[in-house]
View (tube, rainbow, N blue to C red):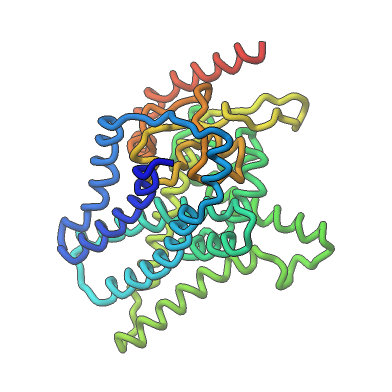
Length: 362
């Protein structure tokens, strides 16, 4: 892999640096990270263009084992943990005006959700206990630990079928999808965990139930964070739990709008009642826009990720036959937030995908 690409994956750290700088500059500077993500990156995506380049299988074998790429995700885990502690300190130590406060929390969630959950997603798919532990730590900081269960054992099995709450449906707005996915995914994780415990002959109401831990740990973390800042500032810092849960809500909302974009309207063919064709690169929306892929650890090469979930981010492939998004995720998120524009832009593309699938299977 070229040196430019190696360095490119470090660009994710620009966003938290902008959030921190915006806080210390104060006022409207707190929106600096938001402008960067939702204005400058889409413009740069348009100017720089796409990257359809794929490695050879031999190159991918070598690059996938290089420690450098894993180290970036490991470092992010510790960074996010420290970033959240700094955020709690910043909230407790300052009296921001409402406009600045909104900008700070929004910018903060771009870091913990936009980048952090992306890293957790990458780590959660890997086989090593260390990487999976890091994934859970990150998800704890955004109150979305059940994602570790539901995404791996639910979403990747049932994607593009009616059984998957995280697959957005044709004609469904993001706001309707948000409720269905957030609530449905949480209860789906409980069902999946119940099935796992039953297979192992373990009690549902016991220490082995991961969902009990995943529900309690974020709350416990918020209590510890609040207690620590309260002791430090010698007062009850009530702002910290509000900040923690607000940034968590925004962070996993960002995850869900990305889910919405990645799978909008895509369905797998039902071969017989309840039995669907295998997942292939046609079953997720793809984007090869170079810059936004750096920031998101190539999450936008989502078609290959679903076809080969265990693949490391640095070796994900582009598939020409996959349905292609017109831009990277930052621009598509803005579009998804305005349903009439989203339907106007994406429904014709979805119709083209449906036509292409029909032609391939007939």
